[in-house]
Length: 82
Ligand SMILES: [Zn+2]
Ligand SMILES: [Zn+2]
Image (cartoon, rainbow, N blue to C red):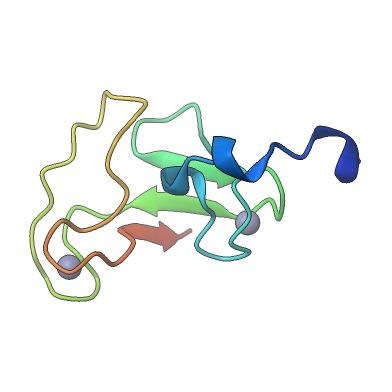
């Protein structure tokens, strides 16, 4: 993709949009609930229902486009590569 032209200013970056793989803020909701795709590295992720780090169950509202992508217990990302 064309890099520099559309890079948003740092202040505009939503940390919940950060890709767990390439750490670029290009994570976008996919067409399935709980699925996300990084438009930068093109990796796909699924929102886990149980935290892969601490095993805490999430309270994710899957219908929301602003779903919390991090465990509210340990702060680890709940996104699993698929
Ligand atoms: Zn990525
Ligand atoms: Zn956790």
